[in-house]
Amino acid sequence: MRRILVIDDDAGARELIMHHLKPTGYNLIEAENGIEGIRKALNHHPFLITVDVMMPFLNGLHMMRIFDLLKLQIPAIFVTVKEDIQKYEKSFPNIKNVCLKDNINLELFPMVDAILKQRRRDYNDVEYTLQEQEIFGLLAKSDRKKLLIATDSQVKSDILKSIKQTDAYEIYHAPNGQEAVFKAVMIRPDLIICDTDLPEIDGIMLARILYILGHPFPLIYLSDRRDTNMIKKVSKLEGIKGYLLKSEITKDLSLLPSRIDETLDLSEEDKKQLQASYSAINIEKIGDLSEESSIWASLSP
Amino acid sequence: MSYTRNVIVIQQSQEMLEVLHNHRYKVLEATDCIDGIRKIIRYRPDLVVAEISMKALNGFSMAKILFKLQIDIPIILTSFIEKHQKQAATHENVVGFMVNPSPQTGFDKKAFVARFDKIFRQLKTRKRASSEHAYKFRQHEWANLIGLSVKKRVLLVEDDDIFRTLTLTKMDAGNRYNLFTSSDGVEGVFKALLVEPDLILTDIMMPNLDGMAMSQLFYILNKPFPIVFLSAKDDEATQQKVQKAAGILGFMNKSLIKDTDQFLKQIDTYLDQAAKMAQARKKAYQEATADNLKDLEEGKSEFL
Image 1 (cartoon, each protein chain N blue to C red):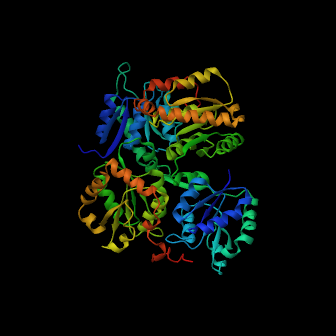
Image 2: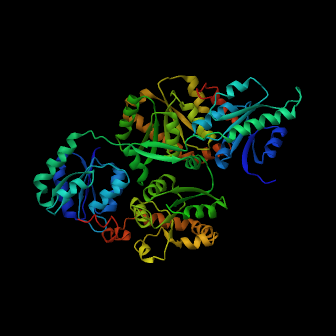
Image 3: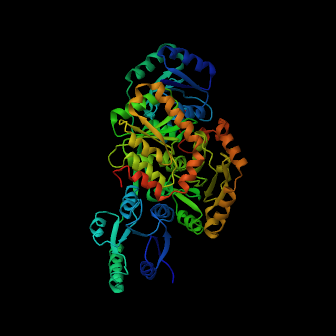
């Protein structure tokens, strides 16, 4: 069954859009915020999505950026109240057309119909690269816990040194945030140790994306400075189990391993709770992406 | 003495252990090929020294398996039979061959040590294969992987493009499963390791790595994925052999696909069965014995 996913925070708008899409004969699915939209897009493989640009916390452009980072090709039609619609069309490859809210009854169906008529779309395969040690990790049926270390810095070798001493973990490394997302999803680590300063997807955004995707991995931050403000932004996410200063862990090599053990010692009850909190969608928990001082902020309509 | 390297040995003589010890290798022993492969993966040694003549899975097969799994650890093979040397040389990851010391022919310690020293010197200059390996996912597979779905994961391994597409379309009709496909046995193995499917449907006859060999590999690796074979042949002998191995749920005739409802019903039945037997399968794989591989070896798998 072919599906179209309609994403809009306004129930009235969703109803109107669905009314005009009914003649397509496609199965219509709706989502009322960005997180639900992304999760449903992943689970239902819609042929097309319509996206409201202005949504609180996670807007349409943020969604497109996340699809981009995740290498997901899902054709989208943007629905907006703004007049200056041209700028969206070129901004992301997934955006196929832009429809003004006022013109939904006239323009939307022909736009959708044109995309549906193309039928066959050329999808690019997603290439995923495994390091040799990761092949070992996958092959091994070991009872060891899996750690994902996301850092591009010098600290990596210090971390590895202090952890390797114990040989109690299976260790994976991601040099940037995007790799970290992929590896987290593939490898399903028991714990992520993550630099706050990663390029493009920083540690804070990484935690948000994992929440958006619904993957509850406990996470410990590593930071250069005592920057509690940064971490406060995502403090509502239950997966985050605090942070350590890089200078501290290089000074005292036993600090990180003891902290890891502490965090890994989650009871089954705690794990269930974590799972439940990530399964339930609460968009407020990720904080407002438009307030970010990074590239995410520039994505405001 | 302090050890600088690790070696895993499978069925080796006291003389060999001594030589390794003198070269500052820390020795870890494995009892047979299954134990050996599992320990190699777990401990990632610098060197493997294995006997060729082992029951069920011999040293050559082990070298081949490690090669297919893209594990580039140098292997020294040993045997009482001198003419095995020629065959040993055909394996890229086999770096040397040694004749076992035998009481019948007498033991020339000097020659034995010299031979190992020579291999050891060559080993030092050996170039390792590339350590990065890229795998491709189709868009829908990728979405299935990164999303959180309650749907069961089914992996279809089939080298025939037309039949694979047809099967995929039929299975997708009810939107009941998260579907993954592979056109090749080795790729199928890695995809299975990455996606951990609830069921694998695989063709038996495939180039590179056939369905039987794939099931053996999962058994050796202690990956108890449930497997159902798809085949065009309605060969009773094959069916019987298939039924013997742990983890293999059954055998489906390819013609069954004509009736979509029946086909999907059958898959659902297998999925139920697979879930029910998960614990038993896990245990059987944990306690894997080479004897169970032998049954499969009689199936004349291309692989062994």
